[in-house]
Structure formats: C-alpha cells, structure tokens
Image (cartoon, rainbow over all chains, first blue to last red; front, top):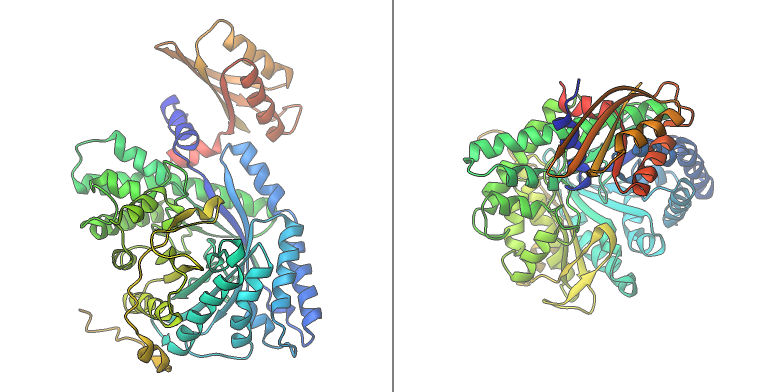
Length: 452
Length: 89
C-alpha cells in the first residue's frame, strides 16, 4: 500500500508547489472538411470540432475533481488550416478563424491551435493567403493561435517565408495595439515543428496523426525547485539525478490523466509532453530552478550549462515514466510567463543574445519576448532566421514568439494578463540585416554527417 | 475502487469521529486509517472503498472538501491511482 509519506508528498506538490496538468489538448484532423466553397468548409470544421470535443471540458473537470489534480487548460489542436483551405476557391481564409472561434466558444476550451501553415520548403496553394490573414484573424478572435513552420533540418529554411513572417508579426502587433499587442503573443514561427505538440501557440494536429487524439502537457517547475531546495550539498551529478526522479513522478501523473481522459472520451491517448512550463506565479519559474542550482540570477554565465543539464534530466526522467512521449518535451523559457525571467530581464542580467544561446540547449526558443515597437521588420525576420538556423543545424524544434510593443521602447512594460504574463521591453540589436533578408530563396538543408 | 482521504490541520477533539461519520453518511466504507500528531499538527490518511458511494465520486470529493472548511481542516479526497502511478512502477 502507498504510505503516508508518499501521499503527503503528492499533496504537497499539488497544493504548495504548483504541480498541475498544464493542458489536455485534443488533436482533431480536419482533412475531411475541405470543400470548394469556403462557407461549407467552415461549417464542416465547426461541426467536426464541436462533435469530437463536445465532452472534452466536462470530462477534464471530472478528472480534476476525482483525482484532485488541477487541469489548467483544455485545448484543441487542428490540422493546419492552410491545408484545409487549399481547395477553397475563395481567398477569404480568415473565415476559418471565425469558425474556429465559434467552435472554441461552443466547446468551452481555452484555445484552438492550428491556424497554421507549413512552408519550410515553399508555399503551396493556400499557404500565402493564410499567412497574410493571420494578423486579421488574431485581432478579431480571442481563442485562436497561429503558427508557421519556416524551416526544418531536412528542408532547410525558407527565407521568403522568414521575410514575410517579420512583416506579419509586426502587423499582428499593430492591429492589436489597443489590446496590449496581444496578437503576436498568439503567433509563433517555428523550425522543425512537432506534429503532436499540446502547447500553445505552436500546437497543430499533424497530417500523420490519427483522426482524433488526446495529448497531455504536464508542468512542474515549482516541484523541481522545491526538491532541490530540500536537498542541499549535492554535486551536479546528484542534482541531475534528483531532477530526473522528480520529472519521473510529474510525468507519471500526466500519463495517468492522458490515459483516463482518452478512455472516457473514447479517443486514443497520444503523447505526454514533458515540458517544464512556467507560469508568472511565484514558485512556478524555470529561472528560479537555475538560480537554485547556483546562479545569482538567470542570465549569468553558467545559465546555458545549467539549462542544458536541466533539460536533459527532465527528458531522461520523463521518458522512463511514460510509454508515449512527444511534443516539445523540455524546459520552456518564455520570458513574460516566468517570474524569475521577468526579474532577470528587468535587472539587465538576461538579454536576448543570452536567451538565444539558451534556446540551443532547451526546448522551443525565443519565447514571449517584448521588443521595441519600432523594431524594423527585417530585424524581426533576422531574429527568426537565426533561431530557425539553431533548430535546423541541431535537429531540434526552435521557435520565435516576439511581441513588438507598439508605441513602447526599451525599459517600458507590456502586460498581457493571465498565463501570458507581463515583462519589460528588451533591447534588440538593430544593425541592419536588410540585404540578407531581402535576398529571398532557400537556405539549403545542412549536412547530417561530418558533425563538428 | 479505492480512494484516499487526507485530513490536515490543527489537532482538536473529534476529527476522526466527524470525518468517519461523514463517510458513513454517504455509504463509504473505511478500509484503513493512519494518523499522526506532530507538534500540534494533525495528519490523517484514510483509505476508503467508494464502490457503493451514494453520490457521484467527484461530488463526494467536493462535499468532503467543504466539510473540511466547516471544521477548519484541510480535507482532500483523491482517487488512489494518482498515488499508485506517481510512486509505484
């Protein structure tokens, strides 16, 4: 039988250390919703989502009550809309965003991800229209997330798409300037985007996935930090081992919730995403884990090394705990969503260049970073190109979610509220990359041998 | 199906009695009880059988939590599987 100590440990993780299931995300294929008539296609999309996800929210709430574990977000990811929209004669692609928004409200989910296009090797029918409609779609909806994959290890980087996305990010901010520039906070530009990611804003339902599937994202930076706090005097090998054991326990819970949710919804259980996802709440910060390991503040020299160890240990513990791992699986470093990162950025210890180095060793990339509103679009494109190059060469997912704070400059603050948090506007190197970005074309895929 | 009731708070007279009679009210069978009092802090873990519980299990968990608020204790009812999955391979 389970002993008292173990029961109390679990309860403490949930009640004091912010352990939660960050998201249960239902992936729904919309491949069968394509139609020549965009209004018919939109209706099919609405009908399919509301049919598949009808019970998603009530089932998750039932699991929360019975197992005593909070499930913070209930979400849906769908087939990249550019694929569904490809056969439509109308080019008013944003109508799909309205259909998704209606479906989100009908099902009561927090977000629907998948207003997306995959253009790593070039634009196909519908891709450009979708990408150009993103700013409008994000400004006129509340629950829709968009993503664009501009590169991959096998295809290289589509520099035309990178150039376009610099402009799209800026436009998304301009169109939502009166709403705290929330648009680009719901838009992510990816390289090597995973097909089964349950986390927003990059979630979409890949074309190789089953018709409907349940993916789970766990969280737990607070638990890892608390475990480290309780165990003083460990060397770094022992620290790595402790993180591994903690990640194991967190992931087991995700596996349980995913299995139960799948059974109750009559849908196959897809994957657990092991990511350590912070929130702005005190005690739920990835930066504070690094500081607990021994940095004065996140961003100090040593940040990349400690983060690499943390990221690797989380994966090792998690892989052992679940038979199905996927998504992004690592440590997230979204600046505005992490109390420790916000503090480090404000004190000047954490700069974008350091964050870029950190993204080479952890999951995702330059995430939730406020940049000056007058940052030229080619600089945003070049930030995307740099980040995509890190992902492409290292065979990992990287992403850029920067928010041009319209009308604000370095030192000002921008606040989104809720899980998206708030943070200072950070300095960007604006030395011009214009000639490079305007060249267009494709950065060739990198060598897979002679690795040095 | 088995679940775990945990009761945490400041020690006082009648905690075990009140929690167990609340369980009886909803036809919940108590399988095992362990309790400790450390520096005035009361900790009790009850293993219960919820096969014949007279309301939905999720509702019973809510009722017990509310009852905890009434008697000034922190009461949680959680399905046993969460502990099994976390602590047993």
